[in-house]
Structures are given as C-alpha cells and as structure tokens.
Amino acid sequence: MLLTSHARMDGTDSTTGVWLGEMTDPYYEFVDAGFKVTMASPLGGEPPVDPMSRLTEHVTASNRRFLDDEIAQQQFASTLKLENIHACAFDGVFISGGHGPLWDLARHPEVGRLLLEFVKEDKPIAAVCHGPAALLPLADLYPGYLLGKQLTAFSNLEETIVMRHSNIPFELETRLKEYGADFSKAKLPFGPHVVLDGQLITGQNPLSAASTAQTMIELLTYPATVGDP
Image 1 (cartoon, rainbow, N blue to C red):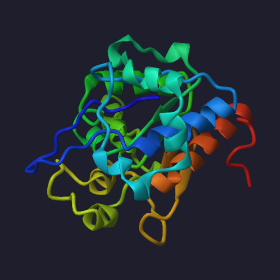
Image 2 (image 1 turned 180 degrees about the vertical axis):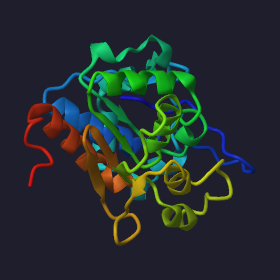
Image 3 (image 1 turned 120 degrees about the horizontal axis):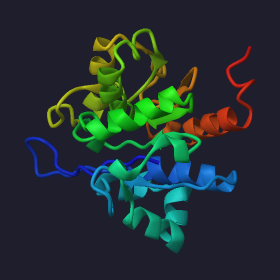
C-alpha cells in the first residue's frame, strides 16, 4: 500500500495528507481476505492524515476499527521508505488518496520506478481518488501507458465542491486527460465508481475505496475471470 508523505497545501493554512478511509477501507478488505499488507511512503515513517477525514461525518467503520487496532496503527506509524520497495516482493500495489499525492506521488521518481516494475511484471496496480496521480511519473517513464487507458479519479467537479481546487497544483481529471486517458466518472458527484482496464484498477473517491480493493482482490484471486462478460 503506497501512501503520501505530503501535508502542506498551496495558499492556505489547511493541511492534507492521507484520506484515512482510503487507507483503512482497503486495508481491512485485504487483511480480511487473507493478504499481508505492507505500507510504504516517499519519506517513510508515519504519513500525515488529512484532518477532515477524521471528522465525524467521514468516520467509517474501518476508521473505528483502525483506532482499536494496535498492529495496524504500528504499521501506519512506521511505513517503509519507497526507495526500499521492489515489485518482485509483492502481488500488487494499492495507492491510497487524499490530496497529498498531487504533490509527492505525482512527481517522485521512485514512484515511477516502482510502478513500472509492477507493469513489467504484469501485476495489478490499484489507485483511488487522488491516488491515480501516481500514474503520471509512470507514464513519463513509459510513454503511451495512459493513452486510451480507461480509468477514473477524483473529478474536477468534486474538487470544486470540496473547495480545494485553488489550493492544489493541478486538477487530476484534467491532467490524466492530457496524458490521453479515457476518463469516466459516476453520474453523481461522490458516488462510487470503479474502473478496471487490464491490470489497472481505479476508484473515483472515498466511497469507491473498498470496492476498488475488492476488485483487486478478485483480480488476484481469479485473474482469468475478472472483467469477462
């Protein structure tokens, strides 16, 4: 599981980081399915958490479970440095969101290096909300990777609704389209939406986090049937 290390937003005192439910929802989907989860981030150690994701209206059952789970909390507090991670040791990679990835995961050379390893080894890459920003350095190393790729991410409309579009370096939907991606989104903002294209799985927003992980689990467990008519 790849997490952001970035907390500062542009032009405001507000902070960002990992959107907690986009880590906890997938984490428990994987753990309950019998998978071992390793957490990594660009800087290692404990990633910042977007304070808004701790508010009552955003607290999910998995968030509450995480607060009572000392093992998971210890994992989160001691993420491995990204530079020490290689795809050969893992079945797949899940990239959590929060606005932080727009700054670090979207630009970090180690992100591109790692994801390219997963592509070359034909292993699943899943990303939710702003997590697909990590696909940009991959596309820089692998020109054409995003061309025609069916995917989703936090939409421009959702960015406007949460009133953070003036405090971010770019709008992710726009940037992915500039790279040639075939971008789709839910009919209603903040509705769950997951897209599978080959070994790439993307989810639009926090409500898509669990189902993005479930799709990845299906792909890992039954690779020959997922996506078939």
